Length: 77
Image (tube, rainbow, N blue to C red; front, side, top):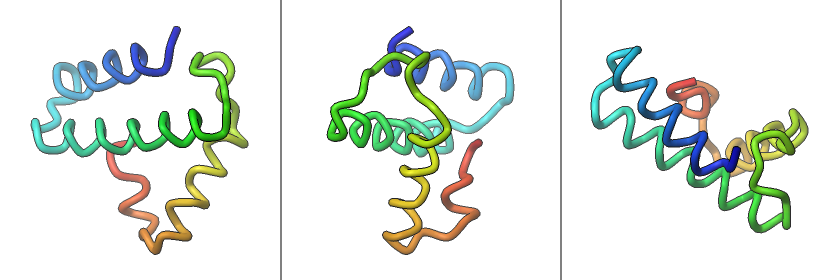
């Protein structure tokens, strides 16, 4: 499954099953979009199966380097 498809399914889940507000879902959409863009810049595959914990950790480190707090990074996850 491609990351974009997984993103849309996850956002639908947040809205329909978890009852997240439209604004929260939009913020999550933006966060995941940034992750996908980061993966693109690294030349990584855009398949969910190819994403590993190192990819996610690297992304979190980049967010921390930008000065974001842990609660902001954790966001909707």
